[in-house]
Amino acid sequence: MTTTLKPDTAVRGALELKSLVKRYDGADENAVDGIDLDILPGEFITLLGPSGCGKTTTLRMIAGFEEPTAGSIDLDGADLVRMRPNKRPIAMVFQNYALFPHMTVAQNVGYGLRMQKWKPSAINEAVEVALASMNLTGMQDRSPHQLSGGQQQRVALARAMVLRPSLMLFDEPLSNLDAKLRDHMRTEIRQLQQRLGITSIYVTHDQAEAMSLSDRIVVMSKGRIEQLDTPAEVYNSPATSFVADFIGRASFLRTPVLGEEGDLRRVKAFGREYLVRSHPDVGRDGLLVLRPEGVAVEASESEADGTVVSAMYFGPNVEYEVDTAEGKILVSVANPDPRDLLEVATRVKLSLTNNKAYLLPDQPASAS
Ligand SMILES: Nc1ncnc2c1ncn2[C@@H]1O[C@H](COP(=O)(O)OP(=O)(O)OP(=O)(O)O)[C@@H](O)[C@H]1O
Image (cartoon, rainbow, N blue to C red):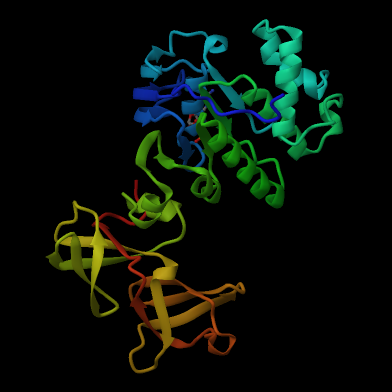
């Protein structure tokens, strides 16, 4: 007998959102303001953005809990908007697990299959496989209240996966778990999703979760998509200052563009010239995005660019905040030699390093 869930061989789960809009009754603004999104079969996509940017509304329209004001949602060519929620080949995992409290673990996991009128023997077998896949063997007769939060979320995952949906939707499924369990479950979700190849859309406002889980991240702000890219692209080549600020930490410097060499631009930072990677639309002036690990720091009285105003030692790295004439600059030094730590009030020279700087068209920092 099979002991774990097997991958789906059919290629399915291609989702297309076109000009999707949602305006709630009585609202002055659209909660979702014209989203276009093409998701490939088997992809893991995260919707990431600050509170109120429209992530949950987008997910709920796909699930069928909200009706779009305009636009279309197609799954494998079928129009989802016209399909009743319970007919959509979609399973959803919620933040609060949403298990049926009066049913056992096995009854919870088998619920959807009973609704689909599977034979009891086939249900038992599928439930057993799903429980084994989620390391829940032996817990089939327990009630949800006899399980830990992590175990309850595994039951919710098993209940969703057993249906072999074309699309899995996750609404902040780990936010009720403590930090360590969250890391562990994150790995489990990703491994299971990759093994089964089910297209997944995951909503979170936790950027570490989004970075570690996703094939691509959709960064949203005010109902719109700011950027859709791989985690590395979003981090290293943010499309806007909003994205740069929201994903990881960043400092910003205004600079004139002094020249071009291929895709690179010559700019000035801390009084010295550098060739940096650049957004294609940069004109005569730019906004330089600096990542903390892309700035080097050394004590220097004679060539000082600023003064250390805070120093935090984490072990694998040390983080400084440096006050400069152009604003506060964040610096992170990896593997610091304990003898070389800089103290607050040290005058320092700063320089760009690691090819981390990225030039954006001039715009107000963290605008939009
Ligand atoms: N049922 C509703 N009726 C009216 N307005 C709503 C409703 N649900 C959400 N909104 C509004 O729509 C906008 C988008 O909300 P949504 O819940 O989609 O954002 P979110 O990005 O998921 O936020 P969070 O991370 O806080 O869950 C917000 O301005 C919110 O106040």
